[in-house]
Image 1: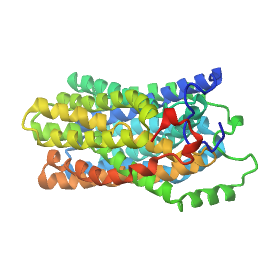
Image 2: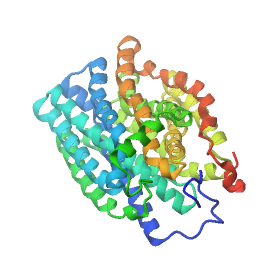
Image 3: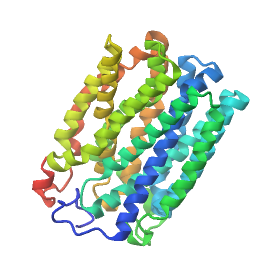
Image 4: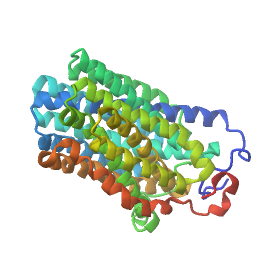
Length: 420
């Protein structure tokens, strides 16, 4: 399979993967899972942090904005860093920042009660998470190509499983009044230790899976990055990922708070509702690989976007609590594939994968930049629950972008496995 082949070859024609590829697959899965654990742990304690700092919905949105700003600042250079240092070193360095940021945010909320300290911790957390996101997606796409089948959504399912674990631990911590600082410091230690060990199994830099020629100069890398910003397909994929990220991020940031405020649930029950969303995402990402290999990106994504529209609408508008919970689950299922498939599409051509993934990530992460304050300010006017109706309103026009994710050079792939 050439470096420019757009999709994994059909499973019945792919050579058996080597032990190194299988080890790298497991290492990438662990990295995604632990990153999800860190993020899920933080979001599950957002209600407790809001109470500790006595924040309105608008000020909470501004606090969450700090994490998004950190992530967005990391994106433009993360692809170049992955090319320069390799995915393993980039992930390791980024996770150090994740652990430091999570610790500062947690202790800042419980020990200092300072909005500024928590915001600085979240900015550091966001920067590390953003850099790790690009590097682990580049590594995941390289492993996917070598396995010869769709697997990227399952890596993101690992992220979702980590988020489920984080949400569950957060609900337990809230139930037993474990301080936010104690909880998040413990999570930071586990995430850092596990990720450092997992990154050691990544594909060796000598395999050149980052697409960075050995003699490439910094100037050449910068030119490649700028060139990616002029590619229509890359930019449209980025726009698709932006809406997908907003769909997922709105639930991450606001679902627990919205159900607490709008449906009079306890903090622990709100965290559990967030867990339902993440379980839906996990199921969608696990089963979605089979659907993608069978029917292709376009029909599968069209269907999942429709599920997300219906689910988000039910979550907000349903008069019955159980029906609203079903809506949350459907929202999670529908939101499950947009982000990972968008990243796979950006990395279709291996030689350009790091810079294109970086560009798509920058565009996509602006949803995390604008989403929290937008929904927070809207929540001040109409309530946090009804503010979430923005999600289905943005998803509907996104159906027009789905076809841009069709892989280039489709004729080179096995039609029986990847018919679009």
